[in-house]
Amino acid sequence: MTVLLRRLRSDRGAASTQLVLVVPALLLMALLVVQFALVWHARHIAQFAARRALAAARVEDGTAADGRTQARNSLAALGGRVLTAPSIAVERTAAQTTVRVNGTVIRVLPVPGLVLHASGTASGPTEKITTPGGERP
View 1 (cartoon, rainbow, N blue to C red):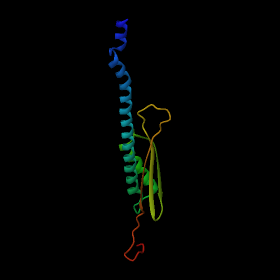
View 2: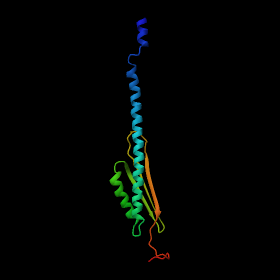
View 3: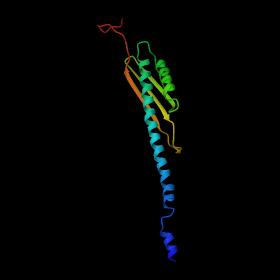
View 4: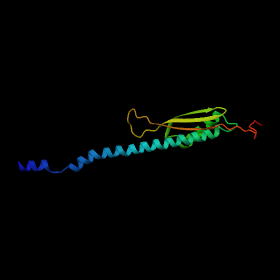
């Protein structure tokens, strides 16, 4: 009887049990860190594309189409795999130009329903050349 009690109280196999319980939790935490680092990176890519598109769309002879083209080129160069399904909206008026870039961040964790988005917005005055008196040349 004492041998049976001694075996029940021993620590044999405890390390294996702890390893089986702890390692999946550590892997999940590491993947969460990677996932949110990708979200952070995708936000920077979207903001960069929006700023580049604003620079192309707000010039005197620029158009909204020029801004969209520049944003697409910037996204293709930097974020083709990180920022998926991007949408680009360029609004250009006589006074203000605004660019919005939105997209979905690639998933590392196969969690159903986990959809993370990243966006970037840039806005500035539309350029127009005037004389010192304020009239157009």
